[in-house]
Image (cartoon, rainbow, N blue to C red; front, side, top):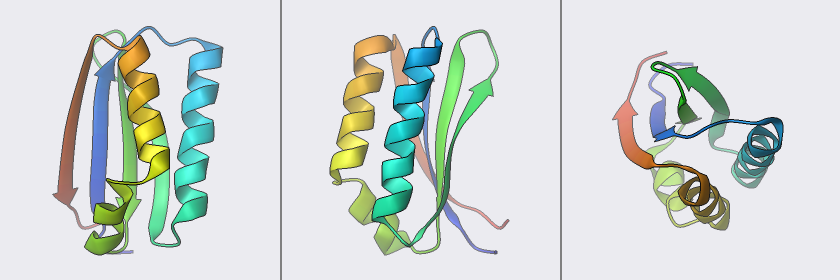
Length: 95
């Protein structure tokens, strides 16, 4: 695929099995609700306790719809409850 649009949430939190399971379940809901979502994943970043939630979209409009979706609101709420910092970014990328 080429020309995917990526949305990322980078956050700082201590990860445990329950927390990662909750995040992955919510990411699966994002993928299920949008046929335009190519993939969502949870990625370990550096330094310690840094994590990234990254979703790749085939169309910008689908990504924009995602910004007001219930699954994203649920992810943000979960991250806000367990994280000391959250940053958001979206980029056009060629994969």
